[in-house]
Length: 486
Image (tube, rainbow, N blue to C red; front, side):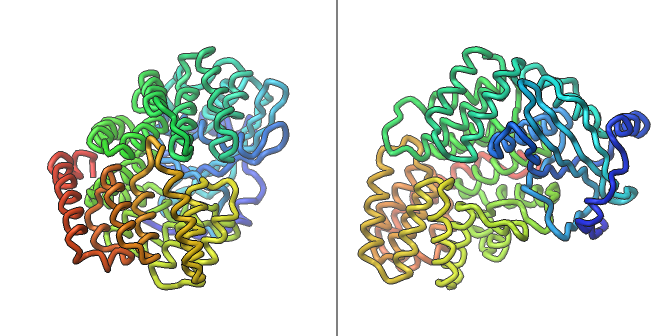
C-alpha cells in the first residue's frame, strides 16, 4: 500500500463539485472500490447542540456500516498532517435544524491511489430527517442496500427527541431523564431500532455508574438491545452494548457467540471489532483480542491517531502500543477517560509526575464517568504522598460500587491495583477476587501487573490465579480466532 501526505490546506481547497454536480458525478462513476471511511464530527450550524450532532454522527455511522458494509472510523476532526494509507472515503457534514427539518450538507472526498482528493459537496434543501439522510447517502460513490425502515424514526419530532436523549450519552448528564424520553419514544415508535439501541446504551451507562440498586435494569437494557437486533439483525451498535453487558456479568461465552454471528453479517464493523476486543481481553483470550486489534488497524483510517483504548496490548506485554492507542489528534485535549488511562500508563512506566497531571485532568472533566474521576483522585493522592486521603477515597469508592448490578470487572481489577499501590495487600486481593467473580479473567495481567508484583508468591493469590486459569481455560476451549474470521 502507498502512503501519501494530505495537508489540511489541500483538503480545505476549493470544492470540486457542488450539489447537483456531485449527483451527476455519482451517476457517472458509481461505486468506489474502498470499504473504509473516515467520518468527522458534524459541523454544527444552528438549532442543534454539539452532543446532538454527535448522536447524528452515530446514526450516519449506523447507516454506513449496515447498508454499505463500510468500516467507519469516527474522529472529532482531521489529524494534521493527515497520512492516509490505501484508499478511503473522507466524510464531513454540516448540520442545522430548520423547524422540524434537517439541513444536512455532505462534503466528501476519495483518497488513495487513482484519486486526487478533491472535495465534492451535496447541499440539498432541508427536509424530513430520514429523507435528508437518504439523500446524503445517495450522493456518495457507494452501492448501499435499500433504506431499512427499521433503522431511523419516521416522525421528524421523534427524530429530534432521539438526538436530544442520545446526546446525554456524550454529556453524561441527566441520564434518567434521557432514558425516560427514549422509553416514551419506543412506546410511540416501537419498530425503530435506533431508539431501542439508544435506550440500551443509556440504561447501560446508568447501570455501570449508579450506586443505587437498579433491580431489573440489566434485563431491561439487554431486552432493548435484543429488540433492536430483532428489528435490524446484526445491528453493530446494539450488539456492542449487549456484548458489553454480557461480558461485565462474566457471560463472555454468550457475548462471543453473539459477536461471531454479528461479524458474519458485518465483518468490517469497527463497532463489532471493538466489542470483540473487549469481550476477549476480559476473558483472557488475547490471541483473539490481538487478532481483533490487527484487523481494526487494517481497517482504521485515522492515522496517525491509532484505534482507541488498546488494553489488549498492555495485557499482552506491549506497553508502547497501549500508550500509542491513547493518543488524541494534535491540538485536541484528551477527554477525562483518556486522561485517566494516560495517567495509568504513565504510572506503570514510572513517570509519576506525568501520571499525577493526567489523573488531575481526568478528575476535572465533568463529562467523565464519576468512578473514573474518583479512582484518578486515589492514584493522584498516593503519588503525592497523601496515603491517608487515598485510603479514605478508596473506601468511599469501594462502598459506592457495592450495589451495582454490572460493576465492570476490569475496572474492579484496576481498583485492586490501586489498593496494592497503597500497600493494602488484603484489600487488593479482596478486590481482585471480586473482579474475578465479575468476569475479569485475563490471567496474564493478574500475573504481569506491576502493581500486583508483591502478591504473586502469597498462597491466597495463588488460589485466585488457579480459579482465573480454570475459567479462562474453559473459554479458550470454546473459542478460536478463526471463529471470528481472524
